[in-house]
Image (cartoon, rainbow, N blue to C red; front, side, top):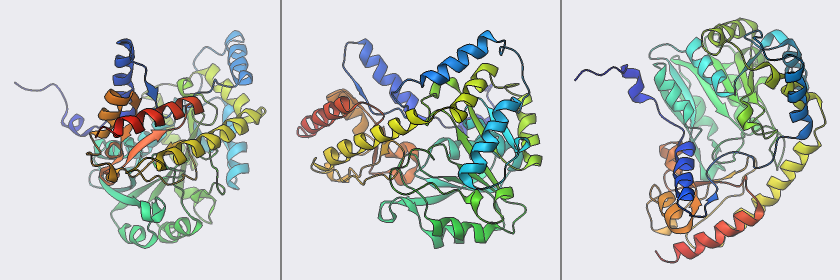
Length: 390
């Protein structure tokens, strides 16, 4: 029987975190108590000043169509923020606002990558990268992130993979799922190899740039000659606990911004106006709630890393950023892909297999510590007891 579906749908992947969340929710409906360490979502409320700004915007009439690339107030606030934090000069005309950060990644691929073009991406990495690359007809080329390199890239092997066929390089640092970061040397080597390539673009996913515990955030856009070759991807979900608000943005050169705005017109029309006004308040308002969240995440990091390392068969590195740990579980004697199901059903702990993030995630598991210390400790106790039965 002929299929109604286009062939490109066969290669379209998914984001396993939402599937794992659905399984966990089903068990909760059956009366099970589940500790959620699978979903990458801050458990804090959106700060009150941001919620108040959204309510005020709704009552002030920000409920209609707005420009596809974003309202001027938010584009100006983003330009100011990126100029200050990345030490580059950004104008509002170089900003495009979207419903979440994912559309910037997808639209950049749609706008720039043609059939057969090579696109480099991190492995293990956010699964949407490889999925989107394949969907637009690009050829995925992985950049291995290995534990022995602190889940950073190997500079020389990465640079050697950049060829005449490379059209785009996707960077995600701080990185999901490993919590790794790029070094200054990593960035400089990539910049040196691509600085004179007018046919190549860097997509730098920096949504965790404010959640760093050791050192400071570095963006390749800050290096000489790289701003015009970089799309900075950022948003409000992680930093301001605004996952459900669907508010993100990209910063890029003006000609590409025009193409991304066209794709917005042809898809979502625009991002909700009152949500954008909340974004203005997020960027320009007090940042003390962000500092508190990051400090609490840091405390939780110590709890989960030390707790995991006490369990025989698990070895967990201390992530430098994000709210994820990516422990090595090869010593447990259970297939890494089966481990999440075992923990969910036996221990009531929801987590994700490392292979959800690419082939090189085999032998690892991802836990999100965007949950309370009490719940993290409960999860550790349950896991230890369940694993003793193996």
